[in-house]
Length: 145
Image (cartoon, rainbow, N blue to C red; front, side, top):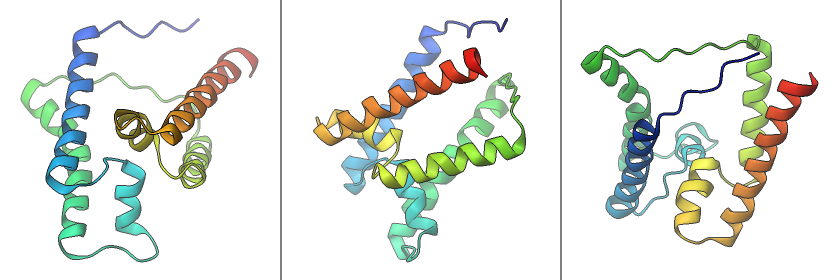
């Protein structure tokens, strides 16, 4: 039997506040939605953005990558992460998520964080579908497979 995830309300609250703050700052200073799929898609899509638009996208993605490195450098705290599926299974899962973000016109950050904050009905439906799919996936992988 797997151990339950530790209850960390303060760290979770701090993380949520930082995510919300970054989304608000991007909207306030750039007029853009902090949807990671759209940000990365603008860097690698069929017609990548250039100039200042490319710069803020690169800076945002760099922040996503460098923030945990900075946290480790400042605190020495390394998260305990264990990934049990195989690399092919992880690649397949990533591909499915990528297809889903295209079909859903955005990702969980764009719809779940920014879209819900803007009271978007489309984002509400997308987020409900994301959550239902996540619940079904966890149930299937932990109890049926």
